[in-house]
Length: 487
Length: 95
Image (cartoon, rainbow over all chains, first blue to last red; front, side):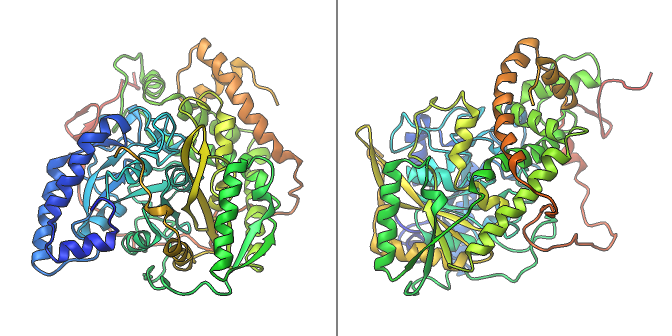
């Protein structure tokens, strides 16, 4: 059951082979057994989850079920959920009980899915290892001494350890795809603007995008059908008709043009990851894909550009945490200014403070043109690289991350080394394109088998095709069905 | 560009984050590393390139100027650090 697809679970629920209450209890039991070590969840509220399960059972009995009705889904703790503690991985929000539902939460609720709990994450989604969380690090289920990636590390570990049927994540610079790669699951960051950001605690608003994290592309298609859609409460939500993301599944890949950016296979890529990615591409050849070499010449610049834009937007977004209306307030202070400064000093962790400082610096008087404006200009060059590439190919493939999961603590004291984790994912956010990571095999590292992800980048709004590209591969390989030992 | 520890304190003040001298010193090194990374941008000639803020060609939507939200003051103030008579309390700012 824990390895079943969302479709299989839906069929079992429909056929009354299992109730949502039983399914939810089974996952809650697994969380009880394994979460104390893995630490994938920050908040579990069995009473609330089981109440939703009971409602789902009634809905199924009444014949009103939708595909995800009764299925337990874990929600990244970045989504505000009514009545749920919502922390964003920060001490700043340790006392914050959501007073309303994020649109993503509301949509899963309307679909009848069960909110199984709130997953751990890097503080305010700033990190690539889940080590910046106020609630402690998350273990990678494949090797407990290693990180799950970040920032959606709790969601990734929860899916990998089968502590949920599927999960949500958010991706600002790779925060869905990199943990999906490091934990051996499928993760999709949709085109910017497809999923509402309402109630999703903002990090870098022009880059943040929510998406599914699941075992397979088929599962993700079902979740995309629920998550996407125009929302007037998000000023950057795109006004488009609802799509059926399952519609392409099962189509042959004959003639698909796959572009391989030479910059993704250059210095910085570990040889173990390169070997796995190359064998995945060989599989695509067998499926009828044509491989073309392409170039994304400004790839290297995406990191400096991102580390201007994202901190700049973060410094502005996080100014709302001032200890006045919600969140942490220092116990002692002299005056209002001192209250702000102490509340923020106590409530934010080191990485969040660093990014706020960088953002404040690049936006400060006299520096705007040299940093923010320059970064926005190079951002256009990066987007133009992709536009040119998509005249030569239908999808782009390459590694998701330069290496496999690294050891906890290995990069914790070197922000720049940590930032390089996102070398292949960041440009996709800057361009606003959809990007996906799917399990492509394992690399042997220090005697352990560690998962490796293949990244698939599509053109704007091409998610349905991308999901089929992943699905076709998952029909001829079984990497996505593998599960870590001891769970 | 190189930062000094007093620059860090000045920026932190702008960001309303208290930092001790010790913290400023420790932060300095890490910030300098990040700024070094950012500096790579300066090698690119961006003359005449229009800055990009959004990938799609979208304009700000407008809506009728009518009330759309319910009153949720009680719910929102239930999680506030200090409130009285429906108002948020902060230290005295006007003598």
